[in-house]
Image (cartoon, rainbow, N blue to C red; front, side):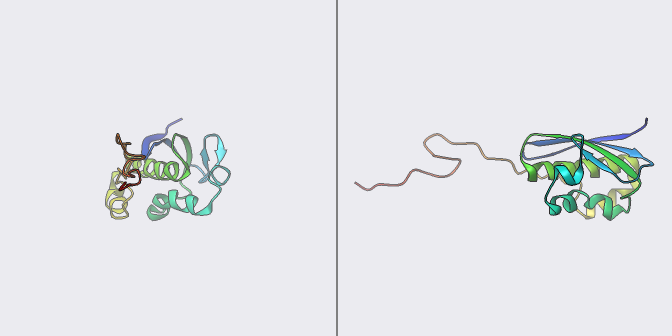
Length: 129
């Protein structure tokens, strides 16, 4: 069966997205329905935005394998993966997806801990005496 595949990343999360043409619009994440995996409704709205903007919500069945990170990072990774896969289906969608900011990889990641500090930037409390 033919499909379009793309990878999306955000923070520590990585999502491998497959779009199967001619579907009914069902989305499966890690072999579970979308609403069961992402319980919060805002996450579902966030990651299906590229489909809504292009008007292709019910044109594809989507299968996603996502790992690493937390729920927010995983939702962002799936969103980028869906946008990149849509671009492979039709390169004419690039201006629409670019305008919505769906093709930009959010490069913000956790900053590393520095020596002598408690976290990346938090210093121990200063004592005068």
